[in-house]
Amino acid sequence: MAINIFLAILVTSLATFLSRFLGFISSVKIKETSKLFRWFNCLAYSTLAAVIARTVIFPVGVLEEATYLSIFLIVILSLIIFFISKKNYVYPTIFSALGMALLNNWL
Image (cartoon, rainbow, N blue to C red; front, side, top):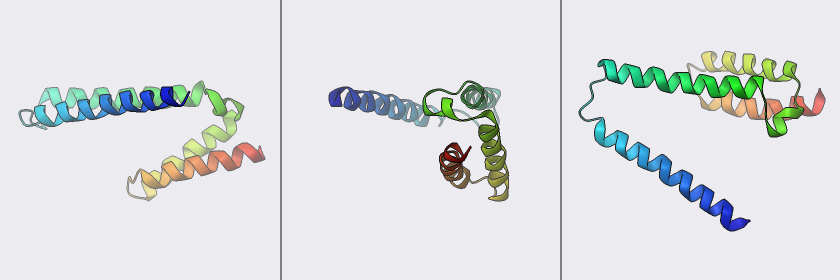
């Protein structure tokens, strides 16, 4: 079991760093104002939005035990914290993890 976890971490790390490295190499020739760059940016944000929506609407694992009320409450509060903290990702991420843990035990 431990070797499978190690292999999963290794493969996902290699895939992540390989894609970042290839992005770094190809970014020299792509202008930030180009249509191709904007298309990839839109694609990345839409994929992220789809993953978040799927996680909120169809929770899996431990989140299956959470009520929709607690999930939506944490999402709304995390968005508020995101905008109050001047679009910092750290604070809403920490808040959402702690908030879900606390709300899941209380509701």
